[in-house]
Image (cartoon, rainbow over all chains, first blue to last red; front, side, top):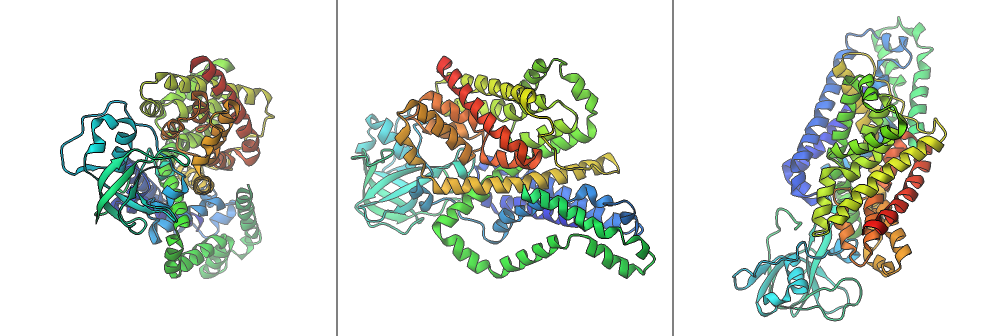
Length: 241
Length: 353
């Protein structure tokens, strides 16, 4: 019985990982490079679980009913299931029943994330295009660390999700970047003015002109974008940058 | 702690009714099946059924709850930590099971130098070959201990592996472009701290503080023992991983990291605050260099302290160590490691950075 329970638990955990891989929902939680490790781990856990099921069903039938009792603790002992293992059901059930969404406006406002300096001191020349299409991260790095590129004189389009601000002029267009998983996400954002704020977490394209950050209230400088138009943007398969 | 002791009491109380059963053996199969079922802990399946049923029925309510932004962020971070850690945990558990079942313990003990200092050094350095993060090193260190590797050597490996392996060092180099001294500092400080803690522990800690979880490989073929070992380790460590992930997610959502910049200019406080932050936010060692780099207002020494402490002491690790080696072990080992890690980071940071 305990063996069968342990095997069931393993199958639930392994199945959850495989489900995340197949549905692509793992991209809400980790970087895309984790796809293969997640699939392999899910498969390995399922193999353990299936083997456990097979042993539990095949070894219980031929054994005389009393043999397990004859040895105190019986052959189930090796498979004894620590109570703490049941906690694995929490994330697993969340994955099956109500997979949490990707990080969004709430995470940005919590400042549980923060922006980093540029990955490199060397910037390529600005690409062609009118408007110039930028991720929030590019917009932040160009304005803060590469203003001489002429970024401030170009019409730009920044794609990301909306973060409405309470009681302030403007709103953020933002995107979160992961180093490893959602626990270490950092938000890149631009303060938009000139157009009304969309709903929180709506994916949008904002077109306008960038300018350097004004007075920084606290924390990191946030570039501004004087917007002329805002349009819906299809939710990307990988919500992170 | 309570959950482990509950587990063991559940096992023994579940076995006790077994004693009066043998006289009832000749009863019809249906009766003995019932007796067998009763002897098993019914709590588990009952809880499972109730949880499944209530979650299925309350799905809409849950979705509404998860819709509340703060809770949604919490659950995203919580699930993310578990999903990110599980592949590494599986790797560590499988390696550990192979080690336990297939590698004769003589091989490992013979491979280690007799001299305690040399053994700790070799074990610490060999951490460099495990391409993973801290979730893989805990079960593997447990596997070494089962194989009779001296505590000092196993602990040196436990502490050094997540910090000095190539994946983590490359990530550090990427996070600090043009500053190879950060990579060197991390390697030297982590290795030195791992060996120092291991030697201090083996010299001063009372024996018997470190207790491996009750575990019986059982009889049967090697493949069957491999499966049993891997299953037990995975479920055990996985449960404690969930506890650690829940704590880390709570801190992640509740603590606005932005306010920490306020102490950046005070040298001593800056080191302590970043070191403590590394403990509570429990970021994977493959990613912590990027987070360390983002604290650009802090001194390089404080950033180094963050990267040395994180892979050795954090809430996720403390939880898993408590599960593997006993709560009494974790309660002493974690503070010792923290103090030595901060000291080591400051010393190396002063010399190198």
